[in-house]
Image (cartoon, rainbow, N blue to C red; front, side, top):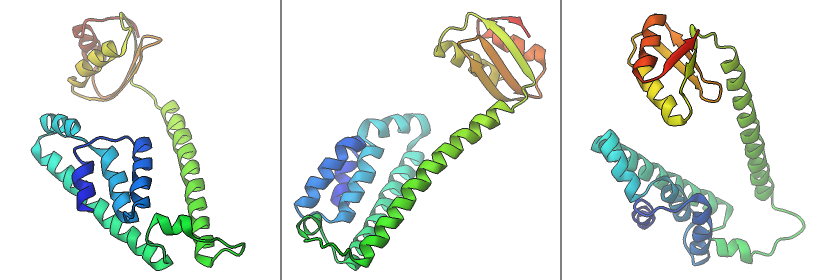
Length: 207
């Protein structure tokens, strides 16, 4: 597992590319736990990512991130090996070489049911969360809504947002680039909000 940590942290591999690599290693005798460590670590970080985070957030945050990732991956890897040990399967070769009968063993039925429930729950959670936040966003009452000219791209929206964040009392900003609308929530004065938009280089057409 430590070897998988050393290989996975500096070398980037996307999730899709990591799976066949992990399967090939398991076919060669790698434990499921070690393969899990690789699948967890490789897509989560790489050398260039570490350098960027170091510059933006500092060495302390990078150290905490890498240590947490490594420790939790190894811990879950040992747990996974323990589960495979209980069910009597130590490697992927044994899974592929096992002769399955029509009468499935009890543990196979239980694990399949749990896996199915987790998948259903995951889909249901995503749908519920998406609808909830969409509904929540639709119910927000903004304190200031302005029509702004000259805003055409994400860079424009970013400049306006950064300028508005400097205004004391602004708690929420929602920018609609397509329609040229800036929505602001908070206790800030309308005059201060207008001034911040104009300081960013854009004109407030109407409220």
